[in-house]
Image (tube, rainbow, N blue to C red; front, side, top):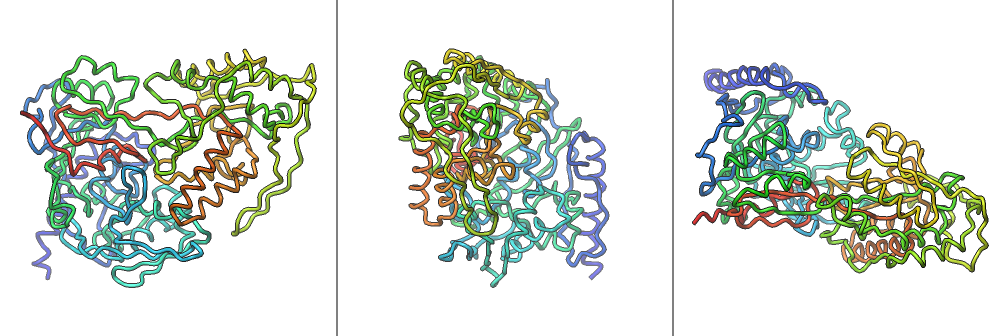
Length: 609
């Protein structure tokens, strides 16, 4: 037995030595701690993991050196990423966009999304939901192999979920908090049961995380998993597997090849003419653009849209755009007595009519964002393009404001009980339009717009402030640093604020944490919005497991939002993927993160004639 294991163990020892050398060269600015320091073998491990491929210390060409061999070649793509490789483990990839991009090609989840953001099976063959929405039974595919040739099974899912809910898990704490509320049972080798504490229609979206191989990692201390050599020598079930890892002057590059085990699957037997992908990392956008100009890379994983002009003079380039799953919103503070008029329905309607939101976004944000007409994301299955704000009409807005009493007392509310059942909703407090009230002179009509001190967003806030001043308000912009901004939002220390709500990394459109009355102080309802009808609809939508019914509920939510305008949606940020225009088949549908640009990679191919 010892003779049989001698060479694998020597290979593993050699790998660890090389890994130590590589990490000495690496930068140590990772806020999460050391990148991947060397580790000693775990004496309590119940299995012996397969030998880890060595980290190859072959230098990659440095910036400033033209390498014609990296020009487009048939079957190969070389892409530049800004940042560095840290941990190629899907449970840690949320800390680093570079890791997320690469691991999305190596690992798979039980589910994935299509180009409309709909959750569809991946490693799962199907799933069934109980009538009360509390129990999900997942049936797994039986034709899946890990890239080392061993079969995939329920045990791998069991292991991965157990890691995330372990108190010592060194990854995202929100994963631990969520998965500790989910009861999981392995029924058999290819069947699992999940039981929730309350209905959650978006639960299948939570199963898009990459599954880890239990046979390679089980028995290793969870607290030390972020330091395991596996994080630079991953084994997944996805279409691409690690070929080589390169390092030069602290910046990593990695090459991936189409996995032979994936080629055996029905979906892997056609396409994937891009047989090899090389990811080169750069410390700055400027370095990546320079590499693109030299032909050192064929694409840039993400180029800030404000930098698109830097590639105008380059030939053979295509820019693929999509909407980042975020929405910028001007929210009102419903909790402050000195701006109590922000609870008034007619004030909401007047501001919606009196502010040219589209013009403000186009004048200030340019190519960085597009105007937002809905609190949900364009391209999503839940998006309703027919939900429209009142038309821009500043004269009508002034007429409406003239009928508002700006010293009206705040309507009474009821305490919101807590519990595991449906959340009881406070008394309706949104004022419906009523006959004219006499305006009262001398009441405060000045307020501030809180915004993070980012140049484009400050310009947007100033544009809005000018338009609101034209309606008779005195408006001041408060631009503060990111840390102060976050704290003031949490404390409710603002009159109005420009907030960017992100749905990432999930594709499901559930807006519960942003707008539900229970999420004031508990979630991201920073202004304490209280609207009975909106809260009721989004709560029903997040509990409804029948797809067609959810679509109808989210349409109702968007119609209510644009009719009652409890906040002003402003913009959606834009994502730009730059490639050589001879790369065909790239299609940008709905993306939950930039890594979703690879959804159609099976169809990508070079046209170099």
